Structure formats: C-alpha cells, structure tokens
Length: 239
Image (tube, rainbow, N blue to C red; front, side, top):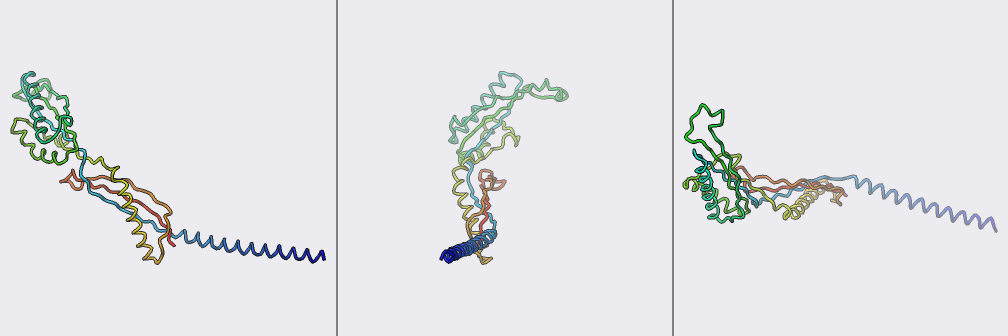
C-alpha cells in the first residue's frame, strides 16, 4: 500500500514537472518570437517648417560730420542726432526704442598717414543713432524713406557691415510645441507608408530624438522673413 502511494506521488510530481516544462517552452518560444519581431524596425524623419516674420529689429543709423572747429563739430553732431530722432519718431517709434553711441572724433592733421594729403576740414566725427524695436512694418517703411535724411543734411555712413539692419526672431518658444507635434506626425506618416510598402504594421516607438531648430532668412532680398525648421528622428517597431 505504501509503495503504491509513493508511485502515485511520483506520477503526480512527474505530471507537474512535464506541465511546467511545456508551459516554459511555450513562453520561451513566444518571447523569442516577440524578440524577433521587435528587431524589425524602421527609422524615419519628420520635418516641420514654418515661415515667420522678424520680431526683434536692430537698426544702427550712422552719420558723419566734419569741421575745423570742435565747438561747431559738436553742434553738427547734436543737430544730426536731433534730425534722425525726429525722423524715427515721425515713423511711429518711441523714444524708449532709441539710443545713442558716443561719436568718435578724429583729428586728421595728427594722422601721420594723412600728412601728404590736403583736407578742407580738420576734425571728422562718426556716430550712431540706434533703434531697437519689434515694429517691423514701421522699420520697412522708414528704411525705404531714409533718403529723407539726406535732404535734411545728414550724411549717412554707407559702411554696410556697421549700418545694416539686423532682423531676428525671438518667438521660437511660442511655436516650438506645435512644430514638434507636426514633425512627429509627419514622421509617423512616413513610417506608416514604409510599413505599408513592406506589408508590415507600424508598431510602437523604440527610440526618438528631436533635432535642433534652425532659423534662416527666407532669401537674401527679404531678411525680415525667416524660415524655422526642425527635424525629428523616430525609430518604430514593425509588427
């Protein structure tokens, strides 16, 4: 009787061990299939692009005056500054948006490299009236009408590097979320098309990374129009 009971116990134990091995084989096999499926991936890029207008403009208006007397030279400097400020105020800018640089004054007679040349003046002064504003329309209108300063006796410095208007876009944080969302949507569309072409199904995201935002001029002739771009890289599983 005791040996029969022992055989039954061994039989039951063997059944449980066999069932456990079968279950283990099933789950291991399923896991391997899932692992194999997970290794099938596709990496795609999603582009988002937006055209925006500059919202931060810096315009240095340079003037040049000359005279043989320092007192008269200073009066000409102040007169040029006043004319330029009145010009800017007439185009809708505020005094808070206007600043000045200290003019640089050169005594041409003390310049050794000028001793062999004759000048009708002794002193030469160069200065800047600076405008920093977000009023793009007024800047475009005023710059087109800057020749009016010449008619009032202001000699503008034509140095392109020093007097060119700088157009910047500072509102990137406001459009970032929407652009990232758009780039991700475009990346998924590309992934779905790839999955369709390969007779697969697009799965979940394995890895994703956001590229850097870039801000560039739309073209050379319209520096006040900017193009903002961002590219996201997304890797999907293929089922």
